[in-house]
Image (cartoon, rainbow, N blue to C red; front, side, top):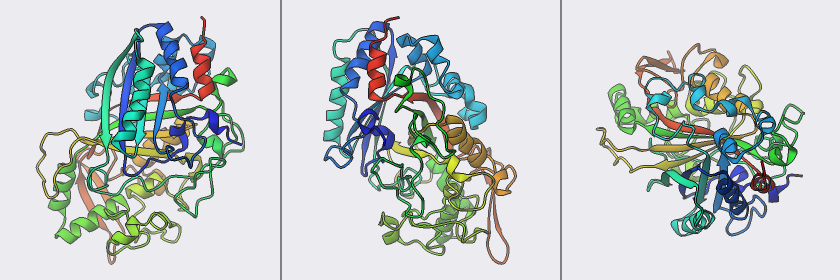
Length: 437
């Protein structure tokens, strides 16, 4: 049984829709103040218990970087038990993640990717009133507490369209986790073992993955990859317009690249035309397989959604070992519909991966499925939407009588920064507060 009263709500709860969110980064300048902050946050963060309560969609979560754990004075023998990717940090893993060129750490937004980032606070809610209540809990935890400095903030909000900045319905797919009491969105997917997402429980391999020690520190915690992703919306629109033969062809190309129509309707269920009613129906818009479409006449194997989660398709490897919980929240102003010139505004997604295995979940998917194509027999072809393309990218999709090939794909998504974090259980927060060394 999952100890839901010790697991932070942000680990298991899907993002509400609509939503507002705020991310705040803190630096610990005084060890004693940092430990007191952990004590206060222990009673302020939201637990995963009571998933059906009226306030279950409103959460305050806390996560720590490796430098943050060092700043709190966690003993070296404990620090050395954390996943090695976490100990290195996201900036050091840039090459493996495809963060090169404009996305490389030297171009990241300060202080992201630096040793100054110690604590990440995330408040998430369906509306601004409830968000302010969650933020007030954070303010009380910080109140009159010297030695803690807020160094960065990002406010996010659902766009008026209810879609992500490129114009596609977002937040559709999330897995079921055994023991969570929260259903998944795909009725064909068996619930995943809790140890894939929460440390201290059996995972899909049949074992229990290594967790930080002592046990009170690691149990019921998880790893989180936060990334700020700038989206070149005007560039995306320009590419479609310049490559397509008509407005209808633009929409088809966009759907083929994504694997869904903008409404959220999957190509797997309606390959020839959009179906907004299907896209809006949460009971149906994720109810599909890929195995019945091996060639990809409906959903191209190289499309974004099929790369990110190949489901039951035949690929190299075991898909369930790389399943992730993904959450995205949009930031920045909308680019008005029909505008194809860049207005210079920063817009995109704050992306969060949650899972117990940074290496075989987040990093594997990013390196092998998003920025590679060998698992599909596609060579070095990258994800047409989120991949690290450089202006020479290629995207092909099956079409009778001959496949269609799109060339010259630029990079549509730029990494502005990110952090690898550990999201501890509530008992672990108290343990951190009581450190004495």
